[in-house]
Image (cartoon, rainbow over all chains, first blue to last red; front, side, top):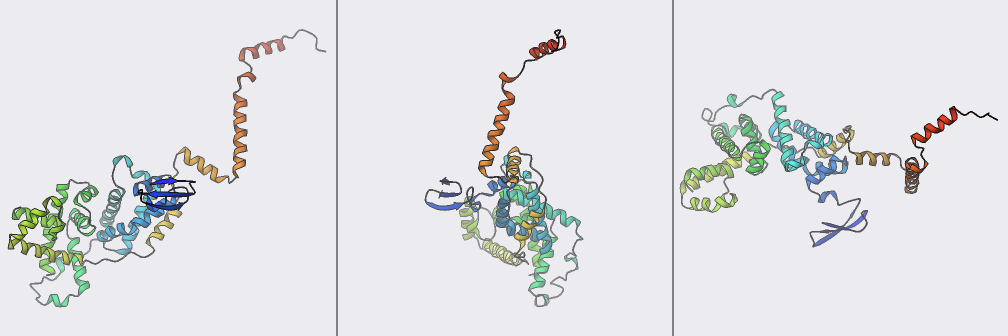
Length: 209
Length: 142
């Protein structure tokens, strides 16, 4: 992108084919990559922070919700993560060449894991009725109950398997990205996904099929 | 691609073989076409995925972003120790018109030149001689 003219009203040539007029002292923030916005946040520019929050808050809420299973707690965690970013943006180290979103997934998931450790564990599916014992169970379970049951089955998985399945299956991250977020090798991540899915398959057959 | 490899890839990349990584996609599709067992496994996997996709999800409140942004405004930001930031904050603090800043700058440069001008300063040795002349001045004071 090239800027021509006075910086307060500049003609921006985007990709050589299109152009637009921007106002202010520089390019419009929505055109900047996350990493450039973080550099501006490091200079204390609140508008850059506003842009990054508007761009990503919902995405990070999604992973937080899937890890803590509670809307209010997930919102609190996302807020805490963004406030950390605002207060100490230098924590994101540009020289490591890690994408902002990868790094921030790590921040949010670590907060969720810490949060879950402090929380009282929910009752697990040991207490749930097994399909074979009650043939008419399917008819009795309504949609919400099935969803709650599914939450329980996922919660029963070991922490790292849960994280792997959430990042790859629900958030749509590639295996490579998810491995970076979790700080493991790609083979380890793949093994975690396979074990998680195999376990879930059995549990779903047992309780939900 | 043998059955074992296919099963692994099915767990890793999901029931939609068309969305598998490019380097294994064609081999996967070929294996699928030639095996009813693999087609059964794909259907099983698709069924599991449908159930998993039904997982409960609550949308965040519509004001989530506003809440975070106002909380950040209330938060006292740690000071950054950059000279540029310090100067820009200093300038922003004193909201003077540009001509005033130019005048002040010229004045400051004038002071600096005045203090640094070697022609105007008295060398230490000369100063000592003058002091001696003053102390041992023998003529009468009118």
